[in-house]
Length: 113
Image: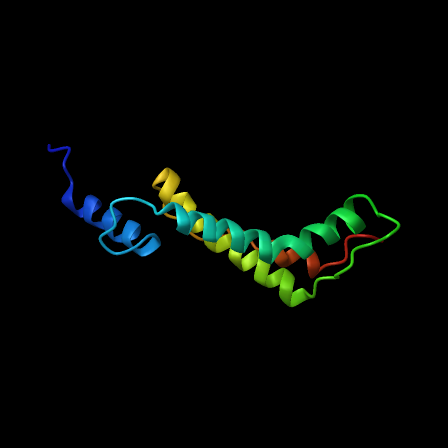
């Protein structure tokens, strides 16, 4: 049995190309910095709100209260970066979890008398 598996190597190259650039041999540090800057920018108000209202309840409060859309956008970016860097750093492809039970059942039946 050969250790060389071209189909796996081709799939890995395709994933690398998808996350970095077609035909690239390495990750451009400016791309990583751009991702990091986008993460800071998109999560700044959400993080400040969490720090000033949820974690510590600062008397001054946050200057900018994030909207639900801003929270959703921040979570979407975090998810996209998680998938990208999970592959680039660990060579793992993200797969959506599959629930093996009906987790919503607790909301259908009263459980507090």
